Image (cartoon, rainbow, N blue to C red; front, side, top):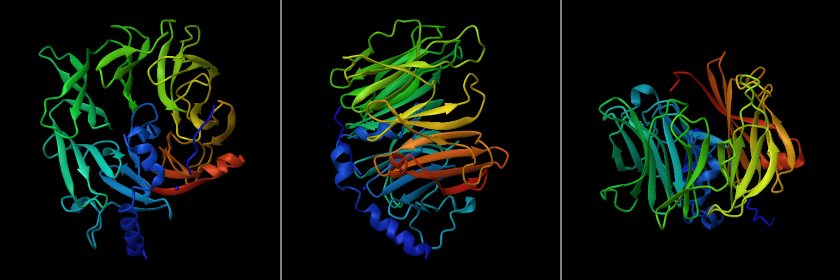
Length: 404
């Protein structure tokens, strides 16, 4: 395969951050980002999207705040331009970095030079998609959504895609995938996909976009354990499934790597309760053609960037055991190295939970939780260390439950 590789006092740091924010249309992201196609790199299957990347740095959403991390210094600062603002809970009405909500507080993505933030506004009790200036000082709300729940969003090629949940008169939840015009959000949205809740696990999600397509996962039929990957052709509004998914297995992970769609097909082991055996990996051209079998890989979350394909590996055979490592593969799907989760800086033993954020830069970001300490950590790994086979994990910042 051929692959195009691409490598980019507190107030002093803050001024550096602001100057960096004003120059995000550099060559690396500009080449790949004219249509927003790079957004999938920050999606580890479940579309957390609490990290977004520009040429100069990363926006990271934590509970009720957004931070900016400059790539040159790897120093985090609050996304607030107000002098002397302490960025604490009692200044939430004036702090530019404050975004109310749940869990990670907000989700974010960047298209070109534009930062988009998706969050739950606790004052209006509505979900908001807002365009934010790169110093956090100016906000323009694009959409205010009155749904029981809004779970995922993607901004791609002049459109905003949102997954929602509503309840009918009988209390049955109905999931929908909607398309809004980014240029004119007053235009009524297009309902791309709708289905009622199943008695089985809710698998609707993994929303990502690439080229002329939008991709997601949902179950094959009511009360089925099996799930399939769907693709939506944006120009023609045609919705279909990826081919050859009728093998009594289930598509559980979905990403893009080396300009191809990658899915994991998992087959349950009914003989061993809570067993997660190795799973088949397949790749497709973006339009769903040219299916290729890549072999069996450890059943785990998947993610990707320009340089590597990543899989999170927990203790084999039991999904309740904590994450052990991340496996890194090259464009030939050959193992490069593993990054151990054992004894990360600040955490003794294994973390209670972790997420990997591949990026379009020299760094990979890592999030981990230590439940005994009730503390959350963000780390970074240099890709040059991965290449050398000796990846050191560096602490970026941490915070405790309720700190923000």
